[in-house]
Length: 115
Length: 112
Image 1: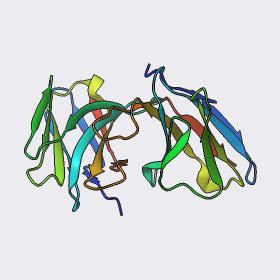
Image 2: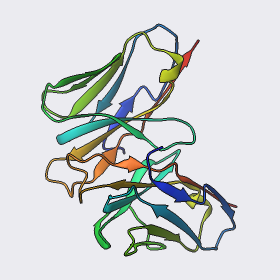
Image 3: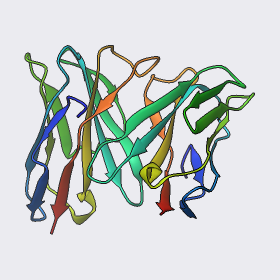
Image 4: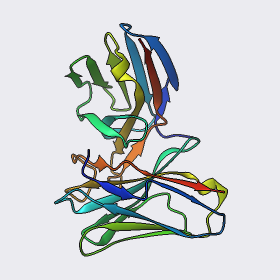
């Protein structure tokens, strides 16, 4: 158990819909990272928040957005869903604001299936 | 095109055999990490290597960072079924925005 909690674990939704994935970081961790893992793209970094502020942006689509709340939990919002958005979405957390010399801990992921 | 290419993509071996997984790039990394991911779980950090030529050992696993810091290898001695999983390398590019770039992964299956 990494201490990072993600909900829901599985989600099936239709194209065009919007979903929200939730993440609670490890106690004491200020950084939250979102990753997307698919068979053809591997593990792709989407976005990072540190203590409520956006810290870094990766390959995140404009249809996707995220935020980190004062209690440090984070949400990833996926809208106008397409079949290609079907993937495993991971949240990870770390104490510090960068991956450099810093262990990041992954949650168990949220499986999103778009039909 | 992946920044970090891992090979082989799939590997199925018998218990007791040795194996090596490679992680290659044309870019220089300030550090490189190896993770193992099991079904239904997120990746778990195994090791971080920082210095060119560095070798780290974790029980039966030996990790090496290339001298030029562009590549790395993971060698497993006397593999066991419990070693089965997806092995991912991830690197921090020199001068990057400090975010990890992950390789495509090697799916290892160790048969009893």
